[in-house]
Image (spheres, rainbow, N blue to C red):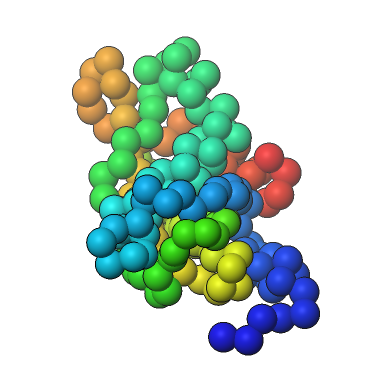
Length: 154
């Protein structure tokens, strides 16, 4: 793949539309015997973006006050290009769909070295009341925080 004249602009273009972006190094120990980052590690990358999204919602403090937190119900990944050490990646997250008691989060993982999308993913997160061990409807305050973050005001 030919490198662009302005790699940062290319990476920013790929990440457009994602309100939360986390930059991480690819670590040597994340590679497997096939000399690329092991498939399981991508889920850790997605987790980093997901938790940063929740942090920006101040959800951890809200959970302490109410007992209502997120729980991952399902996740998936589509691998597009293998990652290798050394590299830096940007992992992005956004909410694709909000339902009554859950939401779908999209992930995008971009390799800075390759200047390309290395993986895409998705997660289904259920709103969970931990003290009662049951799902609950999305509190309006969290819905508003999500809408603000997605609109670039969070």
